[in-house]
Image 1 (tube, rainbow, N blue to C red):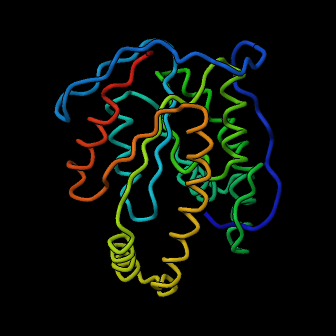
Image 2: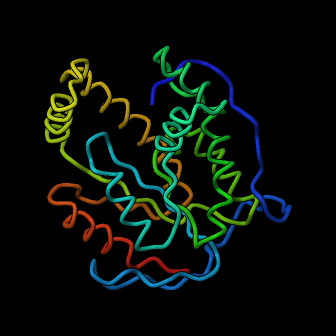
Length: 240
């Protein structure tokens, strides 16, 4: 999301025990997942399951994240939704984000990190969190790793939706036409795609080096078809 300069808001640390970061953090023990789209995934053990979903604009990432939230019983944390909600409510954070957006700049890493830091404790109320829209940069990924390691956790899995660019451009052009967004031209959308792939690949490389499970999923077809592929991809997640 584009927004104008400005530093992060109030910092609030993850609630819980004070522990030193240990570097090599074992995967939490949780039950293997299974079943089909019609059978919700079984409940996991007490250790939070932390996942990230990536998908370019127009990939249907938000739809799939909402379905995973329901099936896994984890919190769907969409930074875009959170920031838009703060803007709509007119909170101090929302006003700052609104100023940034009006200037057409990117929300600074510090502000985004603070937003996530303030929401991650919610993951402790359930079985984890599915991050959507974060981390977008390697700097954000490192900040997330630090937050999680402070609590003895780590990113457990990543889902990356893969959709042909031409299909995405057509979807976004249609959406722009329906919504009357004349500034979303083919060239502008193509540039957004290039920026997404450049940033995302760097983040994925960051997690590949850590041995995090990265599931690249074909994002074409109906929402049900895509979800079935995601479900099959993550069904082998276990503590091993």
